[in-house]
Image 1 (spheres, rainbow, N blue to C red):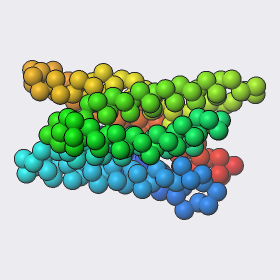
Image 2: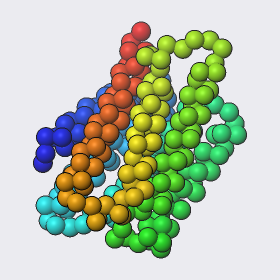
Image 3: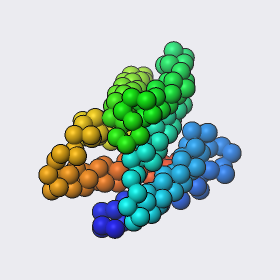
Length: 215
């Protein structure tokens, strides 16, 4: 395992532990509590993927399914964060419809052996759009908000950064098979760095919530 991957696993583990501290607090919003089982699942998937790689077993289907669950979870998170009944109803519909479309892409369109770039690209666009809607609503508030102490700001910043950058990378994932090895490795490093930033920002969000509860 590379140094970058070790750092990534450490960051995800720290993020999980912080979310676990909030999980049993009744005053913690449901969507924040949902991060604990989600991050535990992420760690489990990464561990299982490492085992599969050690056995020379393809991990494509595993990551196809995991990324579908991941995007569906984040759409649910955004539904809990954004304001407005119409946006919430749209996001609730997407939470139901998106995994159906993604699974159809995986099993009937692109197949289990290829990365579901169509379904993933759609998920990226949805998350980026609704993250931007959150920021629009945030900065449209009549009262000033201390962003450093706002957990939802850090969550949406992480989602917007990660999915806006990974959109072009994963949308062309199936073309990477013909890339030179050095270029493919550079793309892998970029993805690890983006994941580290994503979970670091989640950790900051959890710390904000912990500090709020203490005060």
